[in-house]
Length: 231
Image 1 (tube, helix red, strand yellow):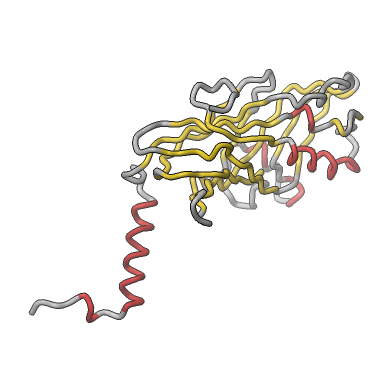
Image 2 (cartoon, rainbow, N blue to C red):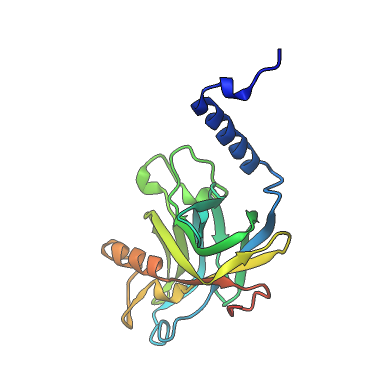
């Protein structure tokens, strides 16, 4: 006998619909009406951020990112682009580092969100240096190497922070048209506060340095030619 779908309770049908949508979003092929979006992290200097710096020389810097999301400009919805941690080595010379390529549904997006992430106990991570032992104090979201007054130092941030960067103008993703989004960060801000250099080896300065790291993520924009200039 032919059965009607309407014999099933409405909540059951809604559950089936949600399961189907989730299955499509988890597919490795990505959504059908979408385009590949590339993310690059570019280092840049804020005017005045490094003018007076003489004691500190940065040699390398890397960050652990997690839960990269786009915010839809036409609704309050957020789209997960990357959930698992990704380690990014910054190009301190002013260049860009590509760290993610993901299919993104066609739409208009006005904000990118992500976490500077301190890994959990058993969480798989792409770079073991971000977790050194079993203690919560041995997990890090940012690792910086350099010299302070000629003496080598390693600064490791233990803070989890959520970054929200407006995309200006909003990013239009069109079906099948690849696009690059550049996120700009200024590492020269990390150890300089109002023109005064901060000793990265003094534990009492950790909160101030972590605040400066959070504030150093400056802007996000479409940048298909990766020249660091908004399109």
